[in-house]
Length: 417
Image (cartoon, rainbow, N blue to C red):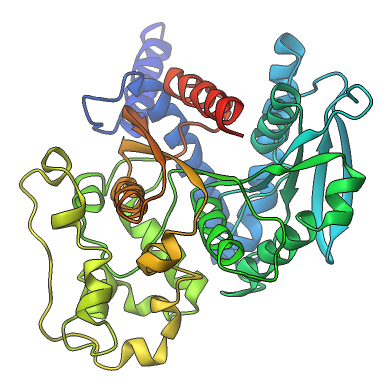
């Protein structure tokens, strides 16, 4: 009988290790941390999927509050030792900008007549989940406000499944225009020459699209002086770039997950996912996708040889005929900023782009950096060989690459905003 507890313990240990372990690229420096975090998310996803199978809430609707509560709980636990995200002197207000809910972070008041920086931030989450109030984002925006002496606005744009494109974009654009108005800048004592737009992942997509719109809007008297994009998602025509193929099974964002998020955002039937994974949606048969458009995301010319490796372009002769006419948002630069013309990119502000080697979105960011540079924009690209999607978030398990990345991001804004 004494042997039974030992056998059970060994079996449970082996089973747990088998569940947690996944093969990861050698470049990732803290693999077991990422495995544990990935296992946690897989468990959460499966539990919520079970709830969905039982006829309860839709998947996306149910995962958001669970994720937020999980984050909040871990944030409180961590705050007992580290002080959490609370930074003395930073004032946080929940208000609306042009009818859009926002959180406004104000640093301690400076001396008389001293103007402060301004920054508007769009959170990530695949246009389907996430919130400015999540512990990870709240911690970072407080830090931005404190260290940069900046008024930071974090936007609660609407999400899938309640809305599709272009609603999240329009929410962010409306909030940004309100923020850039002379009245609001004066109210918060913000220097109109030092205002930034920033975001991560899907938020990076929204930040890039909003920056393009503001930059080309002649009615705007105040425009962004810089944009800072953290592993942004920028196009939906090629899901077979080297980074999509190289990192298709690397957490925390798999290739199939990103394609699913795109389809949800654009209102496309999820049954078409295999067609999108095969690039059938962007076949040469799609006459609306001109050679000029294809050149704007031609990774064979936009990526350095080190990133192209031995991958070959996936160009389909015949595919889903007429799909682009049915889903024109595939070519809409408000959804896919990488497709913007050089004349638009040339008007964009000084740019900072973070990319990670082990991220399906790596090549989106690298191609955008190259196209902006070709258009004459000053671009800084910080690339992390040991980085992966989501590594800069303040998860319950923190990563060294994330700490380095956030510090570099803050330093760049300190020196360029």
